[in-house]
Each structure stands twice: as structure tokens, then as C-alpha cells.
Image (cartoon, rainbow, N blue to C red):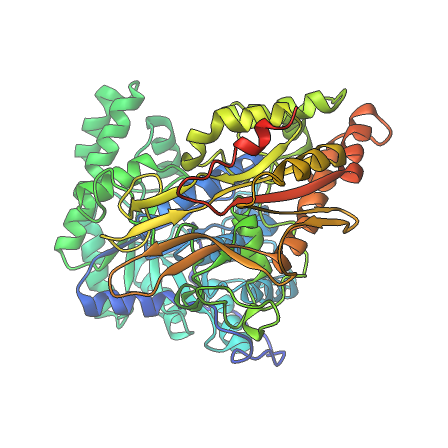
Length: 616
């Protein structure tokens, strides 16, 4: 991160009348979280990421962020590309992270190549998606430029940007700014640099995140000088673990970072050994963080470079996270970052289990959430699910999708092979499954493969569970000492002929309930009511009512089938040219198949797979 802290050369932008007090507050400002940690006397940490260059990289980054979010960082931070090159992707990433993962999100916003209108629109988009925190930066020069220059209808300095945010949005956003322990390269001297930093705070910034450094005494001396200069807000030290020698030299040269002689002496003998470099990086990172925390610094900000292992190992060394242990899941699905949502939401339809980001996007504006038993879809707490969201999750470029799902399709057998490849783990994602097969479905693999060979294209499943411990590594969730239960569940696409065979077979299995729709809305079901809701996951815990966090319900299945069918065309079919055999295969499935869910209500003695054995 790079920014000039010089005084503004003009007055802040005129307010357009945007209200900071309107709209729903979806989360907390980071300054509030910092103050809470300070009051508790607990150290904290946060992670920074950057936008990947490919769609596949975006998908993998989401998975990495989800894993790292389980360590409970105070917040997540996503950068804005040099020259605004990744502005759209940064907005998408920040919005998805805010909606889909646990911690609050801070989005970088720079002045580089950004008009005032572009900045305003970016802030409006961030606010609409619940992103409450902005890191206001001047920004680095655009690619190919050595010097930074102001856009004619833009801002010159970060101070301008901070003033603009406050004038347009009042107190709605939490604002962070950059600090430079070694002085900004463009500042004439360190005293002026402190003066420029204080102007950013006086303009309305809440806290400071520093440029990377490796000299801890120098940083601590700079903090003391900041305090003497009247800068009393929280200062978060930016720590970048050394991952490899070439990257370390490139980054420190670009940022003009001072490297203590002892670090240079330690690195030079091992510079060709990447594993040794990474181990040293963990050791050094942990040592620096320990010195900072011991000196009274409240928390540390880790520049992850979109990598997980080194950051995790540093935090383990500091005993800030449990070593090699995933935090307990309080619900069987990943929760959103919204404090309101986490406080009120304890049940979801099962249909979006493998596309949770789509469900979160659909329900993001809900004022309240169904509680426990989900209730009637006519209840005002149910909210509105009908708005269609194909995003935010990306699934790869057209070329990448053709590589994993087939350069062409000759017939249904090729489609079956793709679904079977996903079950086996050879294919990492499908349009209906953002991530590889869940651990709990491992025991179902053999049965799922058999179903796909028979033409039942499976997209969601769970095994029956009868009183597993809430500490169970595969099935456990909720408070310790409880027990969790599941009904066996399967969801798939199948031809009308296959559906008719299934319906006939189900007549011999009264414990099974099913519902099927095609894309036109034709329905087959043995549900007792169009308003039926069936719990398929529940838990029993001390001093608590029974919790039913996952359900099958009629109203949301009708909404889900619209999304599920559309994914055939929007994600898979679109990769083939119109009129080709592959296009015909996808269209044939879209037009002729049904989406079906089946629940085995006998979670003690039932065997969902028996009914499919009746079908040749």
C-alpha cells in the first residue's frame, strides 16, 4: 500500500445529500471492534488479501478466506489494484466476503485513476452490500508509471478522500488510513510526514494501518512520536511473513523498507532454499509480533499474500489460535459476517447447502430471520426469496470450465461422467457446488456414483445421523456436550422417465417424502401440504430448546429450482457454441429433466438407497 499524506490542495467535495443514517446497518465498524478488544485486554489479528488475476484464483481465494476466517480474525481486508485496475473485482470480493464469512470486511479505496463520481459509486455499492469499513488511500502510480498524478476530476491526497467520505456518508463508514514508520517516500521529512498523517486523522479517520516493516524498535519509536504529535488513535502494525527470498527482496525494494542486518545475515545462506526461507519467515514473524504485543500494541495486521500456512503458524506460535484445531461450528452451515444475522438466524433451507453465498445474497436485506422451525412462508419473518441471484460466487472462465467439464459433450453419458468425476474428487466444482464434496458425504460416495450412472445427477446429499456427539469431527456442531441428528437426504436432476420409475418405487417406502419440479413448474410430490416444512438436521443441547438449523420447505424449493435450472445454461451451457451437440445436450437436460429432493424420515432404521435399488 502506498499513499501521499500531503495536505489537500483544495476543499473537500460538495455533499450530494447522501445520508449516512439511512439504510440498514449490517455490521460493526472496525474501530468499535478494536475498542471492545482493548476493553477486554485481548490481543487481536487481522488478514489482508489481494484480488487474484483469474476466476479460478477467485474461487480458490474464497475457499482460503473461509478456512482462515475460522481462526476468528478481527477483520478481513481486500486491496484495491494499482491504478484502480481491480476496482470491480475488489467491490465484488468485499461484498461477497462481507455476506458470506464471519469477520467484518475492510475495503481499500484509492484516488488513483478514480473520478469523484467513481469513488462515490464505489462507496454506495459498498454500503448497499453492508461493507462498513474503508481503508482510504492515495494509491500507487498506475502500472507503467513511476510517478503518481492526480486525475483531473479526482482527489490528490488521502486526506481529500477521508473528508469526502465523511461529508457524503457521515459516520456510517469506519475509516482506516495508512501510516509509514520509516516515512513515506514522497514526504520531504519525517516531521512533515507526521503532520500529513495527523491531518488524515483530524479529517475523520478512525485508525491507522502501517506499511510493512521489519525493524520493531524503529516502529515502536515511531508510535511514540505519533503520540507525542497528538495522534492517539489505534495503530495496527503491518506484518508481512517472508515467503520466498526473491519476493521479499522485490517487495522491500518497492516499498523502500529497511532490512536489519541480522535478517539479511540469516537469509543470505538459505536464499535458494524456499522451505528454509518460509520457516525463517514464520520464526521472524512470530518474534516480531511477540515483541509488539509485549510492548503494548493491541493487535497485528498480517499481509497474507493470499497464502494461509505461514500466517496460521505465526498465530499458533503466539497462542492466538489453537494449534492445528478448527474452531467449533455453532451451526452446520457457515455463518455470515452480519452481527444482526448471526444473532437472529439459526435455520436455512438445505437446498443452498453447496451455494451458500447465493442464499446469503438472496436474504441479505431481510430484517429478521425464521427462528428454529422456519415457520410458514407467509410469515413476515420469512422475507422475500424470489429475487434472483446467480452471483456472487464465480466458477471460472469459459476456458477453465471447458477444461473441467468437457471441451464438448456428445451425449448424456458425458454429463454423467462429469458428475461422477466430482463425486470422486477429480473435478473440484460444479455449477451447483461451489466447493468439493463435503467430508460428511465421503461415506455416500459409492451410492452417489451408482445413482449418477443410472442417470440421477446428484447435487446435494447428507447421510442419516442418530445422536452423534456435537464434538464429532465430521458431523458435530453446536455447544459441547450435545447430540446432533440428521435425516438422510438426496437431491438430483433426472429425466421424466427416471422420475416416473422413482415415484413407482417410492410407493413401497412410506417413510420417504419427495418433491419434483421441472423448469416449467410441473410438479410431482407426496408432500401433505404446499406449505410443508421438514427438519432434516437438528441438535439437542443442555439448557436449550431443540435447534433445527436445516430444513426442507416447499416455498423455498420452488425458488431454488429456478436458480438450479438456470445454472445449466448460465454456467455450463454458455461455454459451448449455440447449435453444437454439446449445446443440444445441455438444452435437452434443461427442457426434459426434473429437479427432485427425497427425504428419508426414518433416521434410525431407514435406508434411503434401497428405493434406488428397485430402479433398473
